[in-house]
Length: 458
Ligand code: NAP
Image (cartoon, rainbow, N blue to C red):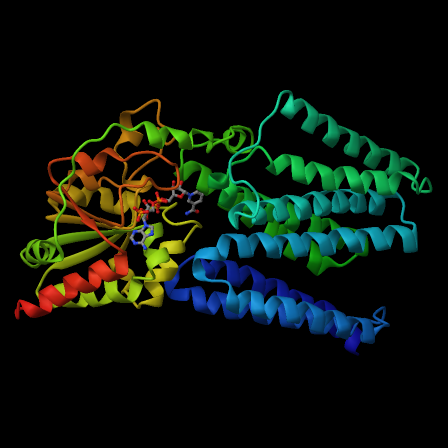
């Protein structure tokens, strides 16, 4: 009886995964999406544990406790700003699991034919994603140098190693009994993962992580074929395709191609920031900023990575409440690659309960900037740099930006004149209409709130 229910449970689980992805794509349904994904996974695990082939519950229980001992603190201890590296670690573990299961399957069950084809792809992608994701984690956590490491004939060497691994994979499919080839094949896959990431700068790691996500998904899908588990095929395919779609969206938002991300050694140009000549900027106090804000009709807030660093989202909510009560129309402009991961700003603003209908995507809001009295840039830099439109030598040339420079007044809250992620100066700061509000985003916004309250009219 139980055995006949298992395929049914798998269908329920697959449906929950699909709904989860659908719901996760909008802030108002995203919580439901998380719950659906978790429920789908629970149904899948319980159903799999009831399969007749599962014999050793003891080992599974040990793995469960070891995994939880690592995973639970990881989820709680890593701060919001470290989510990209946390995601890299999760992919590394997932991919390693797939590769090790493939390895065990090869040695225990000596598969052949189509199963061996699936297993070879599973192991190749699993191992290279494991080391690649570990490298991405190291770069993002700054344990490893974040700059791209390049050397002569790098692409040729990388391609040769991948080709060699692929040839060994084909040889293993033809002669699975030649077990001596397997460790070399696995070793080359592990090595390729390291070499693939070495020439990519820290700036491109989030995009690379999305790509590695799709490799890990594809590896899991292949594992489904190798183990004859249909749910794994579906879940892996969903994971693989959504990772790929995400990396395509990110590349588009940065106006970069996949080849440029993977082979462009972006981030080497960071030294450029040091050569910028000294130009003067206008700075202003919280009092001056408060005066301009309270007499505005339309204020467009542009959040960026600095908002996450300062954890200023709750203060921004207070500012939003105060200004809205004064009849100011406050809107939020979200750039697709603001912050360090897709949806970063949406998550932060949702945490502070900013109404979803006040959040506008770049294409929706760019036309409103000329009517805005103030564009209030909070901890954002690259996504507002007008140089992206015309400076052909800029590493962000061609990247679509938020048109903040078209607002009547631009206010920028940041701590210094230091550059943002791309390591380049921002010409926005030197415009006559721009006021630099130097300070930590949380502290500065708190000061503006105090000034507004003190003015007695808020
Ligand atoms: P950004 O260009 O990195 O600039 C962030 C700014 O925040 C910095 O200039 C920094 O200036 C300021 N800041 C840092 N801590 C602060 C604090 N406590 N208080 C106030 N300001 C603070 O950020 P962005 O405009 O959001 O652009 C994102 C960048 O990441 C883009 O280049 C994008 O291509 C890249 N990227 C994003 C993704 C993604 O998925 N979102 C993926 C890959 C790459 P100070 O140090 O002077 O304070």
